Length: 431
Image (cartoon, rainbow, N blue to C red; front, side, top):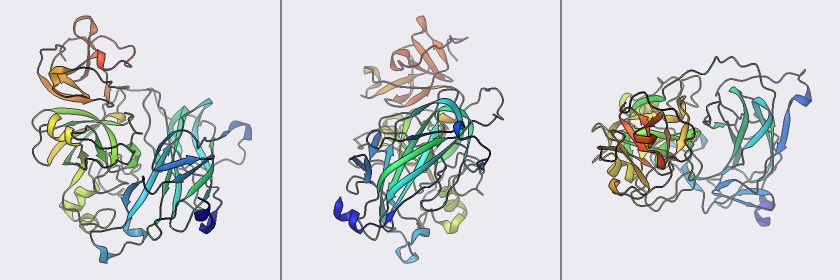
């Protein structure tokens, strides 16, 4: 709005933002690099998936009224006197249209032109599509301001996507950053150092799970939480799926043996920059912790970081994942917070396919599909796959290939995964 723009500190940002997929690996641009080897384009700010961001007149601005509220970091001005009540900062996301390039790239730079009132920020996350068809994680840019950086992609790719991240001001709730222009540049692909694709299981860790609840609230990707909802939250935006998408999904298994496949649609618990499933060389923060150990777990059990989370709050449980009520109660049959086993499905080599809505009266719920112990409609239900979740389709099973195996002793009707594509037959019908 014009009145707010008048009081805004006009900041022309030309920031080379890290946009890629192997955190912490910096590649300096070569002065001898021919200009023709790079491809630049202006990202459309009028299209894409907006959550807490308003797009109009070719600009994108934070909509504080609908933006997701996240605690302010203790390092950003929160004081010890506010012990367990850090200020909430409105945060909005605009997932831009994906871009198919004429040639592979292994580096993405970006330049922003924005008005940033005092205390607000604008930055860019970028990801790329891997050879197996899965997306890499989102990698955040360097901080808003004069900092710049270029990050190497883990493998050359010709499909990339950006995500604009806007945050508001604690001191001035009316202050809203406005981005007028965003230019992305794909650098030339470096020689790949990775060998041939090998089969790899997804990363799996045992973490403490809590129930999210918050029915009627809004998740970080703009999803409105409904009663008995089926989604999960992880404490990092790196694995946050766009609204109603399944790009990042998990398999969560309870001690009772029941499992649920569900999309990652929110950020939390406790932290927002704790991709604990990644090794220290890639982990955004808390790099000294062992891989697979959530920061909140280390704070609660070992007194790490003075027993406090990213925002300076005392960690009163060791949670590394939040579960929507439908996942917690209905799919897993949990009665209380519990230790669970989590597969971070996008980290594996098997291509993920989205679960669609189908009628499954025997499962007893709308919007989910039963996972059975054998490729047979009469087989025992051992879990659920939520609509909009992704599952790792391993092979065809059952009579006429009417079932898909998605894990050991886990089968789902093929009709529930219409985009599975060509799938080989299982050597054995049962496992």
